[in-house]
Image (cartoon, rainbow, N blue to C red; front, side, top):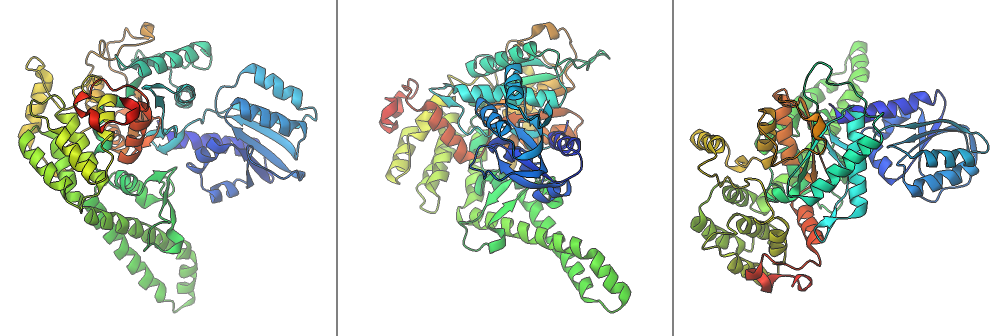
Length: 574
């Protein structure tokens, strides 16, 4: 279950089926991102693809009849129309058309009618309709999927199509479960079920002939766990996304002062960069020592390069030079990124802030935490965004505490010129009245399993104060693989597949409202223990993008659960 390998196989298939010879590839905005996250431009050149063009942007009318054309687009109405126009007036010798998802037959018929010159050689569906971020993580690049706390229609359709493509590319016909009480999750699960039923021949995978349980698709809602996206992260990939932002495997450092010109935009892909691939889940301390070891190895090789005395030395130098050059680029790139992370961590006092964030998320010590928050958010060295995150975590944790003092904290934020309206919006989006999970381990005495789990956790102590928190998703997945009863909390849509008592071997999780790299780390750890899990989300959040999603989702609704904070609410919500 490797998503990057799946996308690569599809792209290989396109390039080989079009045969030898020079080729151009026609893409749309989304398929450009899908291909670029799996293959570099030089990889495509090796497959004789020399030109990349966008179907949806202004192109020249020059006829290039010596080129074959691979078309890889999403089957949207707009793309079908643009492709029809292209086929009526073909510029290339032959067209090999691949759609990234299921295409209606009526559209195929329409395109056939437009192809009067009979230049189309191939039309196929290849289910590469998602962005493969890591081997076990995909995104659909939908930054805001809700308005008035309901689905945006386009986001709902795109999510259904993306998940369907993941299931088809992994050859899974799953039991579909969703988070009870979440209308968004139920609606999406229902749409996926209807799509699978409609195209049942495509999903006819005889996977459980041996009597094993069918795979599971679990549709979750970000509103059950608003804490994970707000916490500062300390593993490499998550930290880069939190402080510098990763978009389609690229990091933009063009606004950073001390970055060399060649490193203003960096590609961070575990598939194309071995150092990053091996260390994306390593914590900040480990990364420092690993980059030091890489640096020492590089210096040793640099010294070896200087000793060119004989013909044999010259030969060795020429043979090893490309690897040496590549290693030089890797060292410089990651030193540049770690330099930025280190500078920001010290400047923003992130060690102290992160320790307090973790304490709020994991321990109920109201009065001590309140005093520490007041002291830190009034400190001018702490940025207003970091201060707001602390107040947001406090408000979520102590929403129903007798001495909850969110209002006085919001007053400090307001005095400092921050945006206090974020906190009431967050409570409306994911407060106690919405959440169904046990987010803060408020365990009832009757729940023996969770009580024991918490007791063991307490006895073990904390290995690292900066990584005490485990996302709710990890506990949910552990319950699934232990074969615990899922039913009232995660009802199944297609219950005829459910009579199996054994736990599923393969699980695909989709989080409406975005996944996080901390959850991807939890999935990676479970996969290393022998499980098979794929995680996806409408997007991959850091704290800022999550706050923007919350504001967008709650924009214009009337706030009913934050009367005590009414003077800090946006005027649209009163």
